[in-house]
Image (cartoon, rainbow, N blue to C red):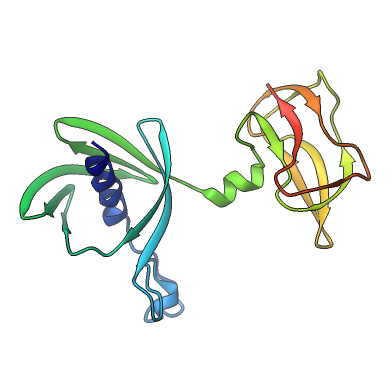
Length: 189
């Protein structure tokens, strides 16, 4: 099961259009091929497949070969060939695999980090710093993207914003307080 899911995630990477900086199309640093000088090529992606989110590091492998033709993807793995329907719409791939259609979506880790959502419903400090402003109170309703706390770190101000609509259930910081990276600042329900 895991091996099949892994190949499905590899398939996502193989169907992704190459991103090349048009100012210098021959530069290996402008491509998204995973080129690394002196190291094996690899591509790091964060994907969601059928509700499960995973960080995936894809390396070139001689065990699997992917060939794309229109909306079809041919996979050869350990000498066994399979053909799958693979339809891409933006950052989402609809992949028919073993008789089922799977939805694989690439997640933008940078945008998610900018929102500052923690693992347990808390909004965390992205780095060590000082709390400059607390803009909410316990019990206050907030909309997605609302600024909750401003953290000063490395001589820059960083906004901690609500990832979704909700109500502030707890505040774990106050203005002037020094906080460590990963510290929960606000609880949002």
